Image 1: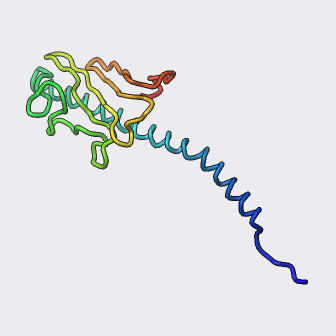
Image 2: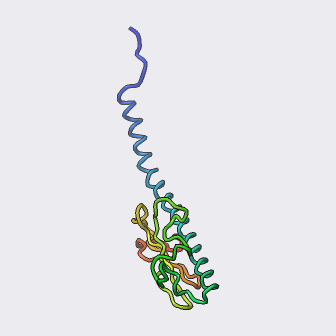
Image 3: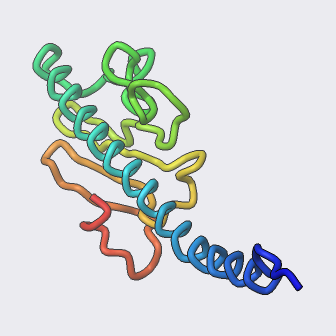
Length: 147
């Protein structure tokens, strides 16, 4: 009698089960790293918008009128800075806005959207004094770790 070569169905099912367990652990970790990368990109974009606001102030001696069509709040003027993140194009994952502005102060906001909408860190804010904060974060999330 000759001996058959190959895998049995049981051996194949064990391999499939092991791959399934590894995938169940690895995929959520991968997704969190992707979200973390997007957060890093967009917090950097928020700082870039802050720098653009400072340049605007240098030229105009006020933060008023930095929004689109000369508005004081909302999306930044296209000539000033991108209204979405990533700033170099692609699918937007954060909307960048001027949340509040006076002649001498401003608050900027990065609101998650699209694939980032369910992010545990919520919305990022940055003021003219450099104060950073997060609103709408999941409970137990260290907002400083989000930045």
